[in-house]
Amino acid sequence: MRTSNPKVIQKAFDTKFKAIATNIDEALVEVGERGVNYLKLETPVDSGHLRQSMSYTVGSKVYKPLGHEDNVKSSGDKESVYIGTNVIYAPSVEYLAKNGSQGFMYRAYKQTKKRAKVIFEQAMMKGMKK
Image (cartoon, rainbow, N blue to C red):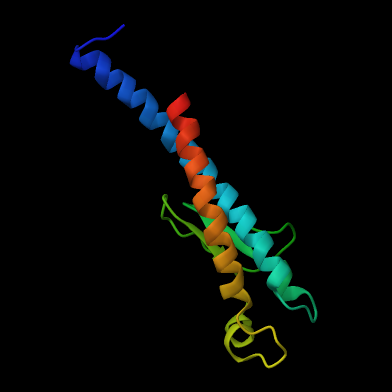
């Protein structure tokens, strides 16, 4: 049944926008989880501390490995996911390592970026079907 009643149309749009927003929030968490997994696969291992420290934040919530004591701060940005580590020597490994591990974060970023596009497309389509 078609209608031109603005209140009915607005209600329909509000329902769709809420469903999409919920799916986007879920997609951010999924991108964070996958990003951390890609990062852990690329991270070189000596003691394992750097690999274990990988975490991500979505809004004010920090997702970090259980038992990890480092002070990870939230981003506060609700529409973004931040993936990485706060281990002080991580930049040295990323930019200065001579053992072939140089660029491990950039490689993980490229993999995450490819997958994130698919995740967000699926989230949008799922929201539109609700």
